[in-house]
Length: 312
View (tube, rainbow, N blue to C red):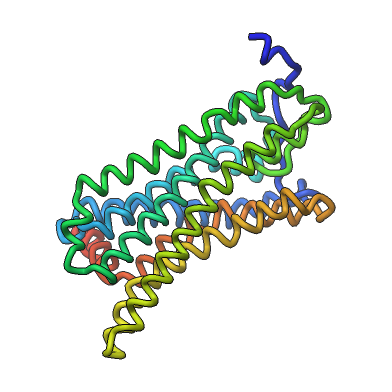
């Protein structure tokens, strides 16, 4: 018990946009629209995959996992973001902030693992199409989903306890409208070397390796596609990867940006930190269902049929 016998603030104060606290309520409308698209779009994909037997295939199972992680991420940030921007209610209890931080980072790591699993799905489908059904069985897909989930929660489980051992006495004002690990440890008035090293290790050993293996899988996919003689068949094979490539880019580019700003951009204006973090958390859940609905005709047709049944 003595390990956590340090001073903590009762509450943290969240921040919307620095310098615009009294006018940021005008952003409530666009934010609500983004959450509506994220929650509604991803829920429709989940219902489409669940309700259409023709979509009971590995590619769509992985897509439903991605949609679930996007819904979970949106729900994890929704309460504090809306309270901060709409009601200017900035206070969040210390333990609630730790819980939100854990959930945000867990679902983010889960999304990274799912994107890696989806790249493996594309690799097998293009490079070993005859073995696709035997390799990606329902048991294998379920095992991959459980492994991704377990990795996220087990890897990040120590983070709340590592923060609890730190005395926080510099300030209780966070830089965002939600709680993140790098933001919280900056308020500590003690040595944060252990937290920083573990945070960097987790980042590189999970997100970093996932991204590396995704790149490797696409190198192998590209080599296999270029070996196809027919130009039309090459385009058809590569077109099946476009949605996933877009999902990878809109997830990893903002994540790399926000990690760089947090660790090396100490003198950057505060609005840069806020902008990068908001893009990182809000853009993927909003764009993923739009991209997959636009580029995947089977998903699009299933959603149309679902609405048709509701209307009829």
